Amino acid sequence: MSNDADRRLEMAAAAVFTLGSYARARLDSLAGSATTRAYILRRETEAAHTRRVAAAHAVADTRVRDCCVRARAAVEKRTGGSDASSPVAGCSVRIGELSFGPDSVVPLVVPLLGQGNLVVSGGAPGVVGELFAAIVDGVRAVVRSLDVHCFDPAGRGHVRREAHRAPGQFADLIHVLTRARATSAQLLVVLDYPHGMDDDTARALTELMRTGPEDGVSVVLHHDPEHRDSCAGLDFSRPLRGYGNDFVWQACPPGRVRLDPANVTAAASDSRHHCLDYLSELAEIVTIARTRDDEITAADHQLQTGTAALARHLLELDDRERHHRAVIDAQERTAHRLLLSVRRGDLIRNLEPTPPTTALSTEELVRAHEVAVHELRRQVEAQSAPDRTAPA
Image (cartoon, rainbow, N blue to C red; front, top):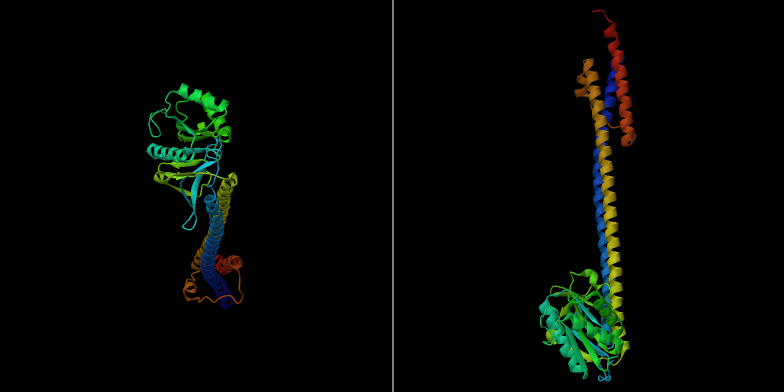
């Protein structure tokens, strides 16, 4: 081989291995920087999510505390000098507390006579029975003229022994209370609804719950949660919903209720306005809680979306890096075979790679590496041609 041909071959081989070494170093650097940026971005995304959730809680908690203060003030004004002998005399019953946090506790007051009904869904029969018995006793202590009717198809005997057990008698009572205007306050206690009543009686009870409070007839009802469809027509404007011994007021989902049947108290309400103020504050708490939950849900969605996008980006970078490394390895294996075919394996051991003078991207390095391999192939073929044409 001539010195000039040998020099060209060495230059082509040096270009192949120099570019390959530099491309690998650049890939390692890019992978490390991408991982670092991803870690920083993930931490920033998580910190932004934490700040957003904390801000949502802070705003909601402040507004809830203000609503609780106003609700407690409305409860304190609920008693007064109304004529309790009137069939439509307002009467409300305090049965426990609603807790929205350490500093946000509201007395749970259920407006009854002249104002509304009470529906309890689920709950242990013994606990519900004690609660209903305490309510009946409390209302009786406030309303001087009160008739109590009870429908107890299972015969639990929690409220009173003379409870109606025959469906026919209960149906007649419902129709009487619905058609005739009451001359005294009426409290109807129904256990295990809808057991023991037909569809006509259930519809009549629904109508009574809709119109009865204005005529001094209120219903205290225990609903069997296994029959979910049966409560579709009930007036759940002010219900209490229970699961086991843990009760949740359905009108106020975020609040947990602590019931104390031993301390149930009833009071005559001097103004329906105070009751409406109390209920409006609880409704405002529900709105605040739902807004907070929507904000937290949006923050969670943003975090998940950002995390998923970052993961996809890292996967794409990883796939591109593996592809580049595979291409470089394949090209260098080709260079090794070419050099060995002309018995120049010493170039592989002795060449000291030096980085290119200009900064190239990985894609540019891979293309330059491919060009260098083609040049090496051309030089090897040029060196091998005389050997193939030489006589044996």
